[in-house]
Amino acid sequence: MLIDTILTPALFHLHSKDIENKQVVVIDILRATTTMVVAYENGANTVVPVEHLEDALFYREQGYLIAGERNGVKVEGFDMGNSPQEFTKDIVEGRNIVLSTTNGTKAINACSAAKFRYISSFRNIDAMAKTIIENNLNVLLFCAGWKDKFNLEDTVFAGALAQQLLDNGFTTNDDATRMACSLWNLAKPNLAAFLADASHVQRFKSLHIESDLEVCLRFNTFSGVVRV
Ligand code: 3SL
Image (cartoon, rainbow, N blue to C red; front, side, top):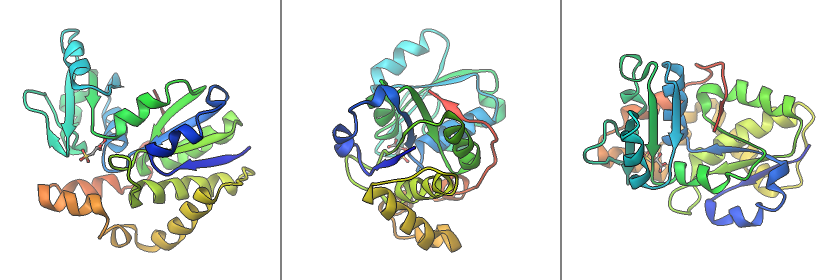
């Protein structure tokens, strides 16, 4: 089975052919797909990713908690922003949630035609790898990036996941995947230090939300996978 990595949503169109027969993993480590994993860890019933803020408002009428950010800032009037630390057990357990974010939920919606569509984060990377291997289908690792630009954290995660797949019989003809694996090998001795200068980490600093970083870089706190 083959692995391809989509480094930014701007490159998605190059990979969308035959997507109906592929499994896709959408990656937005800082923070959308990590926040979704945390919500499930803490017992959320469902987290529906929507592209537009207006769509989230429709779900409020159905009793959903509504969560969302634009440019990292919580949307005014919403129940939660996009910080994984807001999705605590006492708030999300048993609840239906709708989430709209600048990049992550947009990327998820872009690949709705995939045979299997997942989101993942470091918090469930091993479970994600196991499921991809069991599905035994070609896989696209889809980095949400930032406004169509490449980012380090999503690519490093794609490399970490791709490496597990390569170690278990998957192959690649794709230089983006090779590059992602090389980055992961550089990053893994100290992931936080490797990402210290990343553009979104700088953005976290300017928004005073640095404490989310450590939450987003924890490994395998969740043994489930999230199919959307
Ligand atoms: O763009 C997104 O999907 C977000 O994860 C970005 S932020 O971390 O909430 O700024």
